[in-house]
Length: 328
Image (cartoon, rainbow, N blue to C red):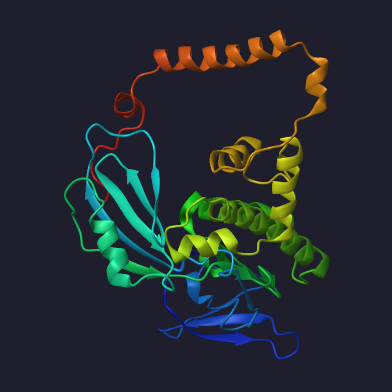
């Protein structure tokens, strides 16, 4: 395997089947291939600009389309969790790291101004800021096909679902795993390509629905953004999941999806969706047995917490970074 870096200047396609034949770099080097993996980010240089695959826009369900990010000094004591805080037109993240803190505000530009969003972020940061804020734009959704002809799109080239649940790396991993499982020969069998696209479609839809739930299941009525989220239509797949939970208190993990029953329960119950029934099998078990089981779970958790070191002590012992990473 030979690694070669360069900026793509031109893409050549086959006139007969539309496959990508080669890419030409700015220095004139031409690189031919049978299979191309597009990791060119939002540009989608091969999957979109060359093959015109098309994009499924999900901004109706996920209206946040902008983010402003900034770093601040390390928090002390170091919190053991990432914090997401709802704001007037989106949400703010705080990610404590060993040498600094990542902060950002994801927002819907249709419901607030960039300056307002940036001020909201800067006014709600703990500690001194160490760099200038930078703004990002995105459109939530995915390519209509993640594998088109002989091009497979991974990462931002394939799609983007906002960072509320930090799922981008997982979707890249799944794309790689599915590609390895269905790796083609030179004829690019349509059956393999179609199977890959179905698997990727399910992965994106499952993540999409879980993200939508965070916005739809809101009790807020203090801004136009949250009223929109509360009143918006949602996909049938998500509505069915909510209905099953309301009727029976049950959550099902579909298609080996990323988020399990505990995650769905945490958001639905935590944001005010209440179940009106329960699994009747519970009625076959004595109440004392059920109570004892729940108390045992609580006891195991409490004892484990007592025995563990605090967050910063654990990091120092097992995963300390000896020097700050070089800023990108």
